[in-house]
Structures are given as C-alpha cells and as structure tokens.
Length: 178
Image (cartoon, rainbow, N blue to C red; front, side, top):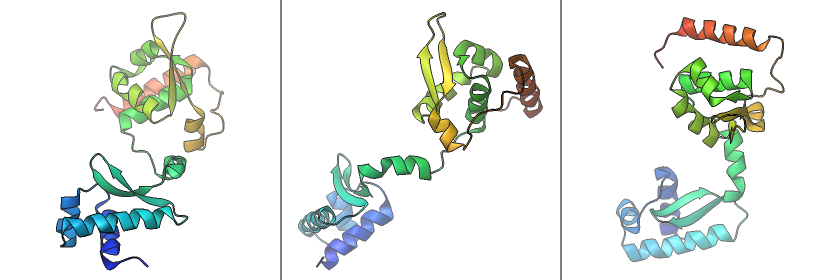
C-alpha cells in the first residue's frame, strides 16, 4: 500500500511535468525533505515492481515522473512534430528532389536552409551525407519521413525541371517572410 505522501508526490511530479528538487517537492507537498525522500524512494520502488509505462527517476535537475525508455519510439510516432513553415517547405523541396545537394537546395530555398537542415536531420526526416563528387552534402528523405507523413512514394510524374519550376512558382506566391 502506497502512503498518502507518496501519492501526493506522484501527483506533484505528474502535474509539473519536469524534474523537481527535493526542496521544491517539499514546498509543494507542504512537508519536510526527509518525508519527501521517503516518499520518492517508496514511489521508485512501487513503479519498479509493477509493469508500468512510467517510472520515477532521479535526474541531474531533480526527480521526475517520466515514460520508460522502452516507449521512446512510441513517442516519436504519437506526438506531432512542430515544424515551422520554412522548415516544412525545405523538407518538401528535399522530398521532391531527393536526393539533392545542399548547395542546390540553398539556391532553390535560400540561406534559411542552414537552419532547417540540422533541425530536419535531428528529427530524423532527412539524411545528410558528404557528397563524393562535390564539397556539398547530399540530402534525402528517410523512411521516417514516409512513415510520419504517410507517403508510400512520391509521384514521379513531373521531370526534375518541371518540379523545380512548380516549386518556385508556389514559393513566389507565398512571399519571402519565412
């Protein structure tokens, strides 16, 4: 049976959604640090002995109620990615022209590409590799891009020059306020 203090600490960790120090938890729970420490240990033990998707862990920033690492892949597929309009357009240009040299993408999209590409690589939507024939990088979409956007295969109806013309027309219509 879990104590009332441990249950209150669990609620605090859940509601705050970020790591908290013993002092912060004690303040929110209106109890002393020793009681908080006992409650944390009780919670950690309780979560460790049940088959739960959650766990209480000590991090450098304090104690946190978080999803077990076994479920991090699920997070990637369940939580929508926040992409700005510029990054999304850059991703579309890469997808339509994949693979594309970063230098060509910069000519097509502008210098904002330097900010978008690292973000898209980190999110796992594109792969960046040094091109053997030039000093630039080759960029292409990953399987995660296809899975996330539920696109089996991009249409190959237009020729490369037609795709670039279409994209440029669309971009001109949007303006440059990215």
